Length: 265
Image (spheres, rainbow, N blue to C red):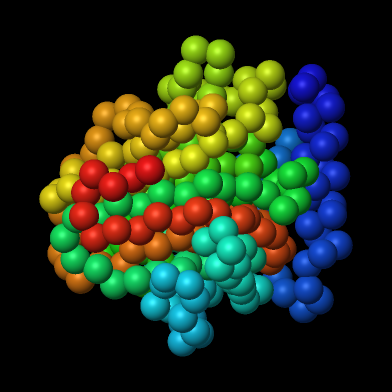
């Protein structure tokens, strides 16, 4: 896509988001996404919102919460036929020093295998939206965490917040004719291409990203990261629209969650 066309599309998406935004809600400048006229920055270091937990079990998960209490509440539904969850959420990001996303979770300890296939009910939605497999020390918006996420534009990353209220670090991968491409912007020719399935494995203090790029068997992708999270911790799936006050959705299907390593598939 040519730069001028990309800018026009992004401006249109932001205009549509502004129209969809509920009346009376004010989005702070730092929470607005990147655009040709705006640079997204980290939230103020002292800005936090308590999580909102709805006390509603869903599928294999004990409960669900709006981590970071996005300006518009999220929701989720479950289809037992294909073990799929459709998560609806606003939320400016899962990034920087704090997160905003709808989170379906279960408390666990020990080793974990978690995997899902991700699709988008609105294929033309915002490119930076994120569906994620998340292991967190708590429900606070700045909690220590490790996550494997897929973006609407196709990029997959393994990310972690090593200390509460500090910026996330990540390793990024993109699908291409020769497999994952590390780092940098997504080339125009790859925008819209997605992994078939992603997973995360916790084995002790080691966390490994798993991927099937084109329907092949799941396999480790890239180097693992090491982080200690005391149990019990929270394990689950989540989604953020990357638009602070605009709802969007992701579908996570054939979700696998086991309390041991070596079971990502």
